[in-house]
Image (cartoon, rainbow, N blue to C red; front, side, top):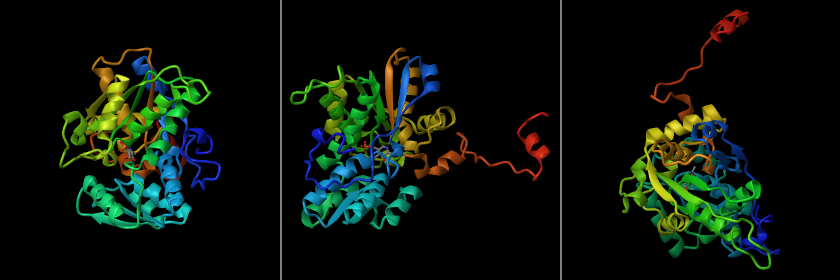
Length: 355
Ligand SMILES: *Cc1c(COP(=O)(O)O)cnc(C)c1O
């Protein structure tokens, strides 16, 4: 990915790039959402990155910067996916990695990844915002390199997702919807769209226009919507369970400069969208990843989605990160596989087939 967009990233031909083959993720047509809304809807499936989330796009650049700076060790705070990504890329770079996670709020899949890749994992008695504060202080006072999205290299890498969207569609969409947690990703997409809409050196602009950015926070963790930090953020969407986003101002700038919105979606709306994506579109994501789609449903139902628009929704992480959500109905009751005898007639009867 870095080599493909090298002319727009802070690297040279001599840079030792730390890569696991991130980027180039599918842009999938959401046929059912299109039918419902009368819009042309696309899903950018970021769960197809090497560690299963968009964090890899930023991590390749952050780890490349860490190596260039001569770092021996990296540190990050994480709601889960950053730790999985940092641990994998640190391994590829030959660096040691420490991650700070809030106690008890990390999905099993993400914990497993960080530990499997050999990271030192510290569970902090606090929330994500506390973890980030601690990580920043460690990086200030000790010889460890911070790879959270407050590191500008992360944003540089993540902006390539906007480039890919334009490269596939031929221009920017009308609307780009996505989840907002620490707000690095909305910042990065907006930077990417802006850069592609401007001439670069002797090359003309790649895209003729820029999208409206529609960001969605979980209702229990919606500081930007509320206009003040949330001290006890609470949502089932753990990846966006953040009360004081590091890129708050940049997210507001993306919203305002693009004529977009940042709104809240309730947990049940997130789970409904999560189920729609898996059961209707064939795309399995983790709950937080469905916040952008939940936002599109919300705007559609409020009559605030004009038909005929081209919409891209980023789904940020893979469903296998947090698979329990696939195993229950929307009312919370468990979904069980049906048992049948080793017998074709019983199997057919169970499936409602008639011979
Ligand atoms: C990190 C993350 C987010 C939030 O992205 P920000 O850049 O922090 O706004 C959303 N979904 C998933 C799956 C994530 O891992």
